[in-house]
Amino acid sequence: MLFVLFPVLDEGDAPLRMVREIRALDLPWPVDVTVLDDGSTDGGPVRLRRAEPDVRVLRHQRPLGAGASLRELIVDALERGQDGDVAVTLEGDGTCDLDALA
Image (cartoon, rainbow, N blue to C red):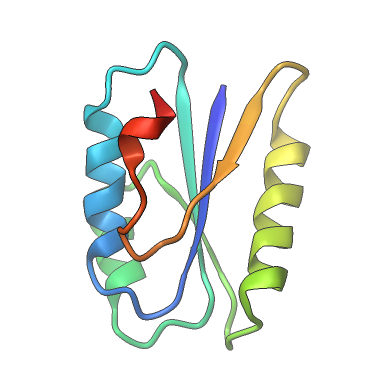
């Protein structure tokens, strides 16, 4: 399993585009995408949840920062994962080279 983890804070629809791009990659492993909404007010995470209901979306009621968000994402993946799984963290603003996952 490849866990793809990224925090977002008012990134608009960039996370939705990222999820769709990740799904379009021809990866040799099953992929589990988890997004942590760090208190967004722009509605992006809500639109993501509606458009991609199988994406796990965690939420902070108020912004706690990148460090707290990444820690929560990693702990969540460790609790759900198994030996041999891999986790990668990405920026949620859509600027990452997603082809690097392949």
